[in-house]
Length: 236
Image 1: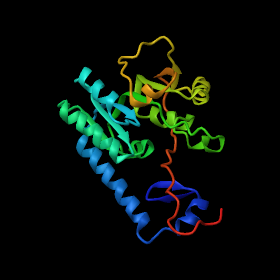
Image 2 (image 1 turned 90 degrees about the vertical axis):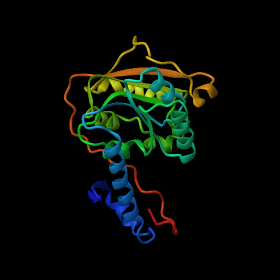
Image 3 (image 1 turned 135 degrees about the horizontal axis):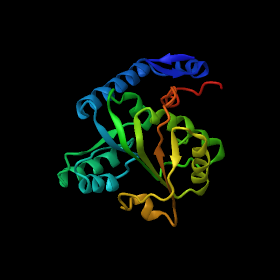
Image 4 (image 1 turned 180 degrees about the vertical axis):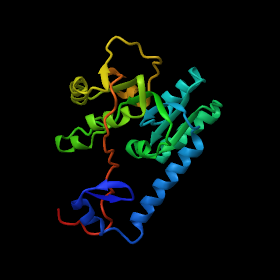
């Protein structure tokens, strides 16, 4: 296993990384360093945060922050247009406890300052990657749950909702095999507020898992791979 500025990458991935334009790998390293600095400035040491993975247009998290002003809320998304709308919502509503950060979820987890933990986690309508050959790209997999467990204390709840039945069954199916999380079928959601994606869904499925007291085992959290090269495609 090789590393790219502390992030493990496979040898095959490293072989085609040379096709990137000069300086691209360094730009990735600088971006990751900037994310770490941003989070260090944003989050107090020993903070407990409500984390929304894929915050979209900010409808849900802004409402949550307004309903629970004692909670420090952080949403992550990758699209600048969505983040702009989300931040404007928080500013108009004067929500100093609500923040939106441009980051992929695994990158965010890697960059989180030591001492910051999750009080609640929300994943509402994440990308289901519906084609079978793309299932490996789904964020909610056992390894990700295990990695997040290291930042979540006993009793932390993780709320998941999707309109993709197969994705829901996959997640619900592997949870019982985890020692750090267990299904909590009868718990009420602390807030029901429809997102843009929920409004578009004909139906959806929901589940809640809770962090157990079992110690989190060390899990190598691999940041997502670099995007495809800008030049000609390398042979597999």
